[in-house]
Length: 356
Picture 1 (cartoon, rainbow, N blue to C red):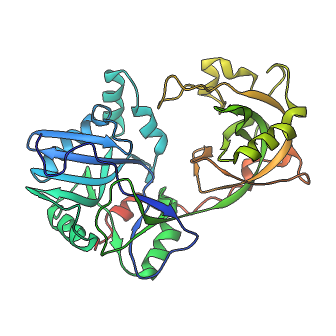
Picture 2 (picture 1 turned 60 degrees about the vertical axis):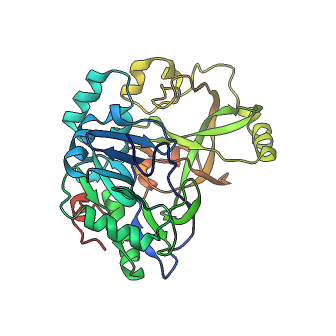
Picture 3 (picture 1 turned 90 degrees about the vertical axis):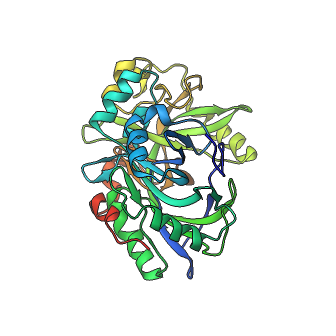
């Protein structure tokens, strides 16, 4: 492979903002695997945000992109899988599997797509130094005949349209809007874009914790919600604390530490089969087989209000943000019923929207 932009390349990143800024280029924020695609003739490589190879996990996508992409190009975009008109991040996680036979079975059952939103190289030319306006036009022309599994991300410069997308597209599994400067070059690894994500709050039971890698202080808090059958399901974590706050939380929660997991709602976590029917901590990590997922059980007596962007099935899609303790709430009041659900919106409508 010999391209004007060669791997590895780290994608350009975004910093968060509370509201959509005016006067920029806007795209929907896709909830998938960020990927850089390198194509040189019959060769194609898909690299993750951290530059790790993804090609073997998406064989159907590699084949489909070879049939659709220009002969020599480098694209930035998102690998997505849709189920029933919505993006399904869990289906992507299932692909990170060591067995090729399972990967190919899943590829046939739920094929992936690639949503392209930037062009880093075309033919013999690197476009890294070109402004976004030029790169976007070149991408639009290059993908004029695109079709499944290759899609051109919808884009607009109209603030009103971006606000409408922010509200409507969430129902298709998208999680916000990204704003970019049209005069800006592509800057690998730098946070030069802006992301505006949905944020809601929920009251959760704190039922466990994990130590931080620095020592016996809180690394993350394990959160639970009661389902309709009265079972406490593990729904995610709250993390990202300062060093001082980690120590404070450890001191606050120490009286709730249990000597063993016996009698805890998540006592079954050590049995693999338990994870098939319930959301429990301690399951295997698809991303890092050696990651320490051990945890300390807490008596499920304290309620924490957290901020979250959206749900993926029955759990929080991303790490939640600690907001405040809620001593006025009873743990049994922390149910799924409190969660706000976006109005459904068919993903096909997003991918067929005219793109600028």
